[in-house]
Amino acid sequence: MSTDDRNPETGRVADSVIPASAPSDIYAVPQADGPLPLSRGAPERKLKRVDHYDRRAEVTAYETLTSTGTVRISFRVIDNTVFRFRPGQFVGIQAEVEGYGIRRTPYCIVSTPNDERTFQLLIRLVPEGPLSYYLGGLGVGDVIAFRGPLGRSLIPKTDDEELILLATGVGVGPFVSLAHVLADRGYERPVRLYWGLRLETDICLLDQLDSVAARHDAFSYHISLSEPPRDWPGLRGRITQSVPPLLETLGGKRYYLVGNGAMIEEMSTVLSDLGVDRTFIYEEPFFNARHKPDPLSVADTRSRFVAHDLFSPHADQEYGLLHPERPLTGRRRATTPPTEVPPIR
Image 1 (spheres, rainbow, N blue to C red):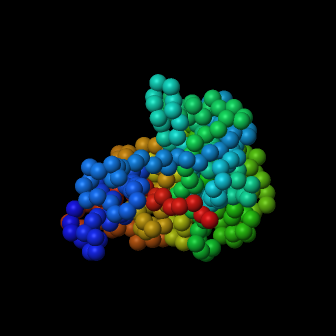
Image 2 (image 1 turned 90 degrees about the vertical axis):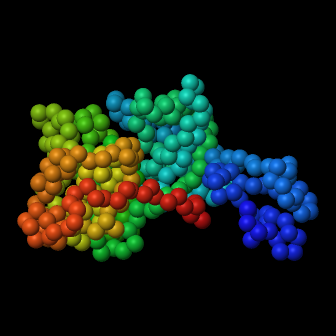
């Protein structure tokens, strides 16, 4: 503790000083009357753990959407704090799961913003996610502890760019919310959603997607199955395989990648290689966040792109026009998770 941390008049430590090594949910909470004692060991300077999951919401509806484990749960906030959110934001849920202890997981909100203090979550029940099964066992009237909403909004700051939305699994959730909001605002530029799933039985939310497409001419959606049935009329393969040939140009677009971290890392690496500025690529991995793309998979995805409208550092290097000290492939910066922001008031 430096002398700068002391009150120049009393010589005692300032009340607001918090040890730099303290976790984010630990705060110094001086409660005593009068000046604080200098000693950190004094009872008045005891650190207190603050529970950030102090908000409460009640289950109002539970829907099983697919036979493969996708459910939609509706909640109504029952605490007295203001609750407002934007598409792309999430809530963090905390619960004590039998056999696993306290578990905490963030879930993106799938519903559209409203003034009724309600929200919906799209959840895939998976064995490696104990909290998902806990939520899957809730019934109407049960109460959860949560924090939020937190995270960045997906709503574009300008309306002059085409939006390319790439999702896998339940990563489509925030895009459903975004599509409704853009339709309400009359967003005029094309909004194309590509949704990657494994099986036809994984498909859900078609009523909402069709509803947006019917009232918003600029919106379209396409589903790509990695294991499609023989008579499947839609796209085939992983979206890293089926989508690149459909993008005639890469410039003038903003790319949103949500879901499997493997897809996100692979696609964002290739887009960057082909000249898309990193600031035009939004990434939100739901799992596999630390995935390192396989060079062969990256090369295969890159070969499927037909667009050549942007300056491509990788292409120039390949043809001998650019001579960097190190190869460009694999030099992506580590993705920084979205900064948590206070609830919108």
